[in-house]
Amino acid sequence: MIKRLEIKQASALWHIDGAEIAMFHRLNITVDMTMASIEAYRDALQSGSYRQDNAPLCEAFRFFGGISFVAIGYKAYREDFLKMFRYYTKQFVMEWYESDKCIHSKEVGIGHVFETMLCSKENTIRYNFMYILEEIDNSHLFVDIVNEEFGAFWMKKIKEAMERKDSLQDITSRIGAMRVARYCMAMLDATTAYLRSVAEGYTERRERISVHKLNEWLFGTVARTGIKGYDKAFQSVLKDIARDESEVQSQKFIAENRLQLDVNRDVWVLYSKHGPSLYYNKMDFTIINSPSMRLEVKHYMKHRFMAVNRIKDRFLSQVAYAVNLLTTHNPNIKYFADVDDVDAKALHIALENAETTNCGREKTQGNIMTVFSTCKIVCAYLMGNMRDESIKSPRPYQNPFEKFIFRNSKDYVKNTPVIPECVMEQLKVHISELQEVYQLLFKIFSNTGMRAKEVLFLEADCLEKSKYEGYVLLKYKPYKMLSARRKVGAPDYHRVLISCSLANEIERQIKSTKLLRDEYGLPYIFIRKRENFKASMLNIWYFALLINKLIEKYKICDETGELWCFISRQYRKTLAVTLIENGATVEELAYWLGHLNSGTTARYYAEVFNQNIVNSIVDSEVDK
Image (cartoon, rainbow, N blue to C red; front, side, top):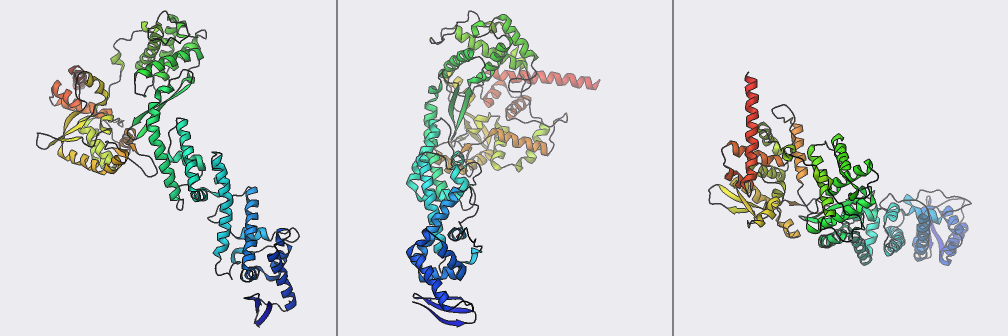
């Protein structure tokens, strides 16, 4: 039943099929006209004729106004009105999908649905839909319908992309990473299977996986995945999958290094473990211009890496530089067997005339020696008994590179400078500005003279009791000398004395990294993990960078007034010189530096002796 109950000022109270609704009263609109409009509106809702023609809805909206239009539909014919609203929500979602629009707000506004509902070619309705639900007590139902239909549509699109193993970047550009992540979590099983498949793809391509790479592949580089409101549950799933796949890669990549040694491939990627991280060496043989000589170098590199486990190797770049110079000078060179004495001499002249190396650094005699050494090694392999029987290229009858003998080669090597006392004193004053862990590195280096890797890979049980009061033994593994120590039956670990105060700081570092070491099953005390990053070892290069920033900031100069350039190797040399100048014997110095024979240690003595002679000559000249 439809009936007007009363009129109060400018408002009329109506009874409409069991609901009492207050509407704006207009004198020029009769009761019969209002009743007829309500009935037409009701018929459109109940019959569903709006699916074919929305004219009755448009007429009702113009007649009653936005707020009364919703109030009548929702309060008197709630089920039919919500069904109609859902229908136009689906229409809006489809029309929006077919356009090129993107969402920039947190929620999809209901106003878009009413615009679709009341779209008319004859007479466009212009209305501010912000307050259209003012008379509705639980207006969230409309928001829920919009979000539900919008989500259902895009979840279907996301699932289709997942089934095709496609990226979600196109979808993300339309609806945003936050919404995509939320929809993915609504279908967790499908999402997990999809993400695991994507993660396995990195392993199949022999590419290291990370959460950052997954995020970038899924959502694109412009997606903001670290902002407040981003689905933490989705990010947690992503991290778990990346961690699981990373553990698989740590075993699989290293075990399959030998499978990369295929001469039919132009790119080899070799991996090794570096604490909790995977380090890799990507060798691209296409840097060698000559295809035939490239194949010969591949055969040698296969032989080289079949015999050693380490992957750090700059051999390829050196030999490629030489081969390209040879073939540029003499295009008739197709194989190493074609290189004669004249070509080798031309290579030497070209290297002498070059101002920089192939890496862009300043050229030294040491660089020339290295290039000739690599060529000599490859040529010797192609001539020797270790040559692969499958090589079809002609066997060289001579090795023209071995005729070039570089005498006194050690004299061409630039010695590591000693840190002047004035520089060291100023560094000690300002080192407190760095993080505690970098302060600890500084103290260990300056007190022990250990090499960078030896410090970086100190283990949790590195501290041992000493028979000397006030001192503790620091146990470390001298990696550079490890194979030599094993050959002579020496233990893997070496020990040096350190002060109790330094030992206490190391003990604090051991305790602070216990949880991280337990999580990754590693003994190293300089392991770290930043938020949203994988765990890794401290970066010695970054440590040196921080020290050099301090030097630049405080203008720390040597005796000549030049800014000091710091590298970690200088600590070892500085400690050695300090010990020598304070009367340490060869045996004592060998103990501190972990040398196996006194010959290596004697070179430090010789260098200090020669430098003292130079200094005395300079001083005598100054006195004159």
